[in-house]
Image: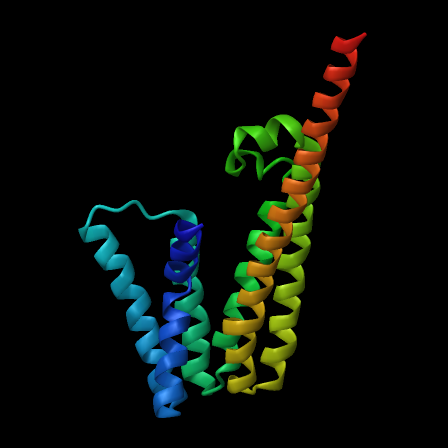
Length: 191
């Protein structure tokens, strides 16, 4: 799970830096320029270290440059604020692929609850779309403090809650299934 959060932090590093600089300075132009520079520096650093750059890294860089440039031209931070929505919609679309979660599940879950994994994958897609829409609603108000609260607490908290709920549900369903199978096997052996 730590690697998932590290990847998310890496994908949104320029937005995080934008938010920090804006919170400290109150200057949209400065925060945007620093956010764009951070995104470019992140890609250069990865290339120098020989780290492979995936599609999301390039897409994130393109979004930072395009939305950041729009912010610089209009001096309106809402363009940068829309970036998480685009990411949520893209991730949600990927999550609509049937069975995408299978590779992330332990073998016991794959063997005992493949249908539940598929349903959970669709639930995650729905969550991503809902968070993207929520972000758009907040970004449209133009209130950066409310947006910062939404992105850092509400959206992040919703994902943590979804992980926790998924864990509890999977554990309950699989434990119940395995106990039922053990009881059935015991009854069969007793007869």
